[in-house]
Image (cartoon, rainbow, N blue to C red; front, side):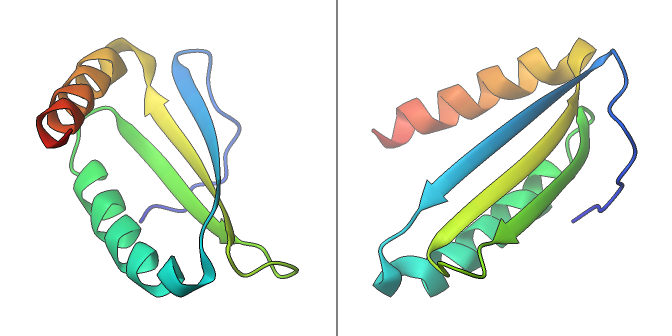
Length: 87
């Protein structure tokens, strides 16, 4: 996982994703999301992804993702295709 904290440039996309998990699923999800972030980091469009777990509610997570805009579309399309295959 990359941890750059610079301000995003005009040619980057930023996604903020909040998830509230079932408490019994937190450990499994943390393993899965860590693997997913490692795979995302191999993409050309990837800039950084930070994962935050709430101190007040340990089943609440926030992902902060940054992607290079000029190639992010193809990454999103690949992700959509992979998701469609699993549905």
